[in-house]
Structures are given as structure tokens and as C-alpha cells.
Image 1 (cartoon, rainbow, N blue to C red):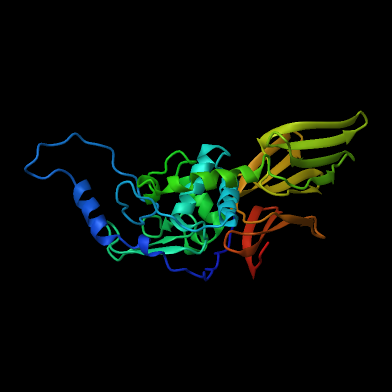
Image 2 (cartoon, rainbow, N blue to C red):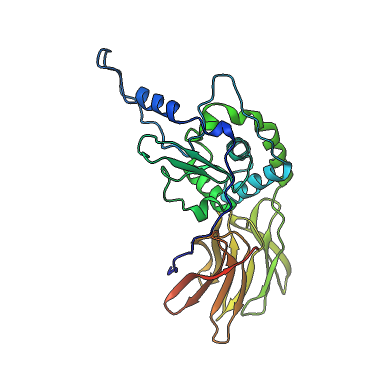
Amino acid sequence: MNQSPRSHINQRRWPRQPWRLALASAAALVVSLSAGPMATQPAAASSPAPPTPASLGRAAAPNTTMHISASAAAADLCAQVGAAAGFPKDNRLVTAVAVGLAESGCNPSAQGPNGPTAGCPNGSLDRGLWQINNCYHPEVSDACAYDAQCNANAAFRISNGGTNWHPWSTYNNGAYQAHLSEAQAAVDRLGSPQATRPAAVLDGSGVLRVFTNGTDGGMHQTYLDSAGWHDYNMGSAGPAGTPVAMLQNGTVRVHYRGQDGNQHELFMDSAGWHDWSLGTPMAGDPGGVLDASGTARFYYRGTDGGMHETFLDSAGWHDWNIGIPITN
């Protein structure tokens, strides 16, 4: 898919709390201890290399916790974008929210400067909700790191779907545990499944088809034919937002923001229904239209904050940032 380069977005950056700044001496100690046994010591058995850090933060003393004042709305933000990123609504999402609260107070603009560490001689910066470090994770741009949904998507990937939180300092020092109750409450407020509005379209044979999130959390289709109404689970995870549906040259196309945060398409052809990810991250729900030439065009807010257009022509699918910042 062709995409134009996405422009950098200036972010408002908040100073990190004082507890985030204890790094240089602790990092040097960690590096020296992890470099291997001293020459005078017997050779130790090899052990797996430590994971690449997601955030550095502070080295907490034993049996201490950090307390960040965070409102329920902040916890709800971490829960919402975490669920949309793909964290299942179980202990994995609860842990994700607790780590986010411990790392940043679930403030998408939070940042924490760090001094030099191994591999980052010029220092580094922890950024956004899950404090993704810019040196150890340069693949996460500033525009992504300070975007709530994009940061959650990165945390989902780095944590291997919520199964490995060791790259986060506040998980390793136990600070996240002070936020587990608050995190559980935020996850409970999400409900199940996520409420969305239906999308409806008439197919080429005049059958009315309606697409929505079912009570089982899957994408459902309800349709009306001569025998009456029918409803079934289409076998894919329900949308993380409201879908849009259209008929293009006899093909029904349904676009929606998936639970992985990417743009998905459901379409029907002579072989049946298909679902695939276009691979373009979304921060909002799409709208769509057929233009005068019959080209399907879909519009949405990207994780870079700009309005994006996805369209299909004879050469295939294309996606680009129109260059207009939008808020929904």
C-alpha cells in the first residue's frame, strides 16, 4: 500500500516527576553487574540475555512503591486504548493499565529524560502512556509515542500481547502493583463487548445487510431475505469502533478499526466473505463514499493525528495523509 510520509506532530511534553530521574548510577551498576562475572570468580552458566527495555524509569528500593495521582478518566484512557490495541479483557489488560498508571499516570504527553546507559551514550527519553524509550525503541516515532492509541499498539507488541512486562521498570520493581485495583475498576467500566453503531448496506441482489459488534464480541452480520431476518457471527473479532459499509461494483465492502488498532476490510465476492488487515493504524472510526468514478474512498484519523484517505483503484489499495489535523 502506497503511503505518503507522515508529518511530525509537535507534542506538548510534560516534565517527568522527580522519582523518574534516578538513572545514571543505577544504570551503571546494572550494566556492570550484567556484563558478566569478575575474572576472579568461577565461570557462571550462561543465562538468557535481558529483554530490551521498554522504559528505564527509576531503580526502586526493595519493598517500595510509587504513587501517581491519576483520575479515573486517565485509567479509563489506558483501558480503552489497551483494549483497542488487542489486550484481552482479563488480567493482561488489567496489568497493562496498572503499568501505564505506574509509568506515566496514563498521561499521553508524559516524558522522562534519562542519562547515558548501555547503547545510549547520549541519554534517552521515555515517552507517552507506557513510556516507550526512544533509544531502545527508535521504531516508535515521537508522533506515535505521544499518540495514545499508537503508544498502546507499541506496548502490545513489545509486551508480546501482554505476556511479558519485564521490559518495563515499574513492573520489575513492583510499582505497578499499587495500581491494580484502579486498573481493574477501569477494565470493569469498559463493559463487554464495546458498544458500536451498526453499518448497513444493500448488496447487488437487494439483500439488506447490517454489520455490528455482537454480544459475544465477534463481528456479526444480520441480513434480510425472502425467508426473514438472519444473524450470525462472521468469525472475526468485533470492531473496536463503528464500521462503515458500501457496495462497489457489486462487492460489499465493510471497513472498520480492528481490535489490533489497524484498518480492516470485510468484503464479499463469489467465493464468500473475507477479512483482512490493511495494515494502516487508525485512531478513529472511518467514513466512506463512492466517488463519481466508482472509486471507494475511506477517511479516518491516523495515529499521527492527520486525516487519512484509503482508496482502491485499478492498481490496488493506497493510503496517504491528506495533511489536515483532525480530532475525531
